[in-house]
Image (cartoon, rainbow, N blue to C red; front, top):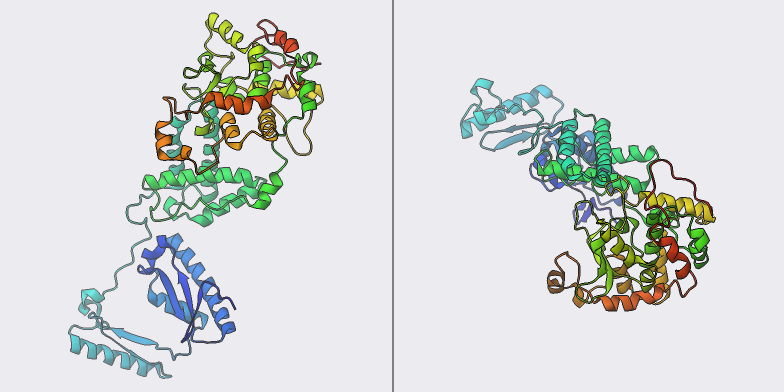
Length: 529
């Protein structure tokens, strides 16, 4: 029979063992574990006793964590006695302890008066032997060491400041606010605020922060999911609450020796991930691409920004907000090899990228040059513009939001829709490009460099400290041979050769003056074919 972790088998019989949580050991006289002999060799009896002890100690530990009380060894005896676990030994109902540490104890009898008299005799004997009035003397005559101290009221652990949960959340949000100044970042701050405020209300704003534990955070997540929040969204909430407790610990409002109580509750299982398959962005099929890029259909996109965004996404697989934030200086020949590139970086206050790997140089496909991309760059420079696309970059949903909506409207006009629970939009071009390069035999490492994913082919000489430190330019990008990247990736994206793109038919639709640069204010007109 395989024994549970809290049950040990020794030659003397079975022993119950419980590991005390590290952050509570100071409340248990510094003990790391609690052991009690069960005085039996019967496995079924041992399982029964150990199960009863386990439940009782779990309740005791929760009480200790909540109130900050001290749990001593005699509390172990009282708990076991309350359960009726005496281990086959005759109980000893009285014990006299002298300040020196010496003690005398006697067995229980049916005559309580005799037991009391025996205890007094024992106290007198210890006082004569070791000096002092003994523990049973009048309070004024007892040694100071034997006077029981008044237990201190429950308070914060050493070094921890008393702070209510509501006040702590308010202070945390005030500290975080300067980090979220752009509209897109303010949207994230709104999620932090909602998480903090909802948590404070659930555990009561006046509760002392240092008394909260994993059970409180777990109850918060259960409350949210019971209200319809998905496990994926609850995992995001978990990251926000974990951030709050990390801040609280760093500022002395939560014990450092306690693990972050908000972490580790929600982990997406294989079943969770399996249930989400098919709900992401689906790649376009070649027939769908031919339908949407046919010149008469492509004209359904109302602005030049919308049209160029779709074409650039088809040839680069870049994220739509990466394309919308491009500056004119980010488009053109690379200074080292002269290869025309899109320089995707975050060298501006209003630029932000998903990850470090997103910083990259993307070779420009010859088809994009044939469609007039570089001419557009020169024309906008001549007009005194600084960006490839006009419009406000500081929007809550990102600078590509208007183009994303326009493309969704065009998809409806074209009769193109996802299958099942999937989605389609500008981000579908990213899936299209990656899958296209995969089917054309482009190695995974090149694909990841091209679309800005973290390089997964490890270990490699390109992943050592030397290369990671010195093989980067002043913008933080890894230096890779652009001609090699272009040779590996661009042939797989020859959409004109596949009949997807009609270069002569689309070029006039992308030229200056063919459509407004950006949507005017008000509701966008429905796209028509």
